[in-house]
Image (cartoon, rainbow, N blue to C red):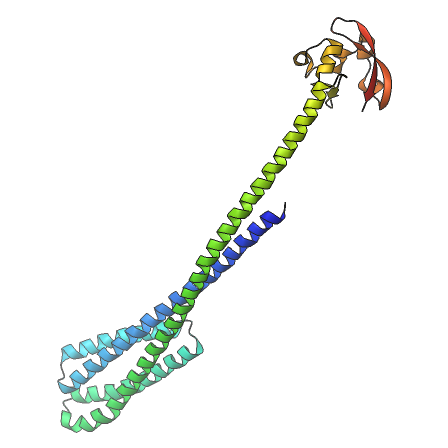
Length: 289
């Protein structure tokens, strides 16, 4: 009987385990997706900052300088968010490389921007633009693109893993729920059969008691009558409905009724006196248990 509910419990436990694994994978996927989005934004802002810097070097203006400073602030904020994230070693290495390369590109760019702001002709800076500045920007762009590729690859791997776990979760849920329902149905069937057996046994006992010619009387702990069969009705003259729930004293001569219960109830077969409804005393062979 205990095996059936045990199977159901084990099936539900497996569902719980798979559900926890599914939640863990989805949480990890959400974190990686967020980092991938941050990397995309950092890359986009870095490219935008590079275009603004080149435009300023060609045609300096206060408006362009303000836009460069605004873009630089956004880039720094995104860079700081990534640096403070819980990164894996490969991500951490790339982020540190980006920060180092950005500092080098920033130093080169700041020096050229300052010279252009001071009126240095573009022709005198051409060698620096096509050399140091272009190399620094290219190195920064390469590292930003590498970070974006890394995050995209991680998202693809985790996406495949999440799909696999969710597929397993669906199959496990279906199997476990089906198994649990079958186990519960089987348990209900076994319980119903046990109840039917008990009811049949009680019915057989009740039939035997009711058809017995001998008087069969049962008492509770307070010596009150709980069973009074047809044989007892015929012998004592009381209908069962009149004696059920009443004290045994009703069926005993008055002198015995005054005695405490232990004095008149004992084991074995013995000769006792009873009292009919009419008050007539009668001798009985009683087996008291």
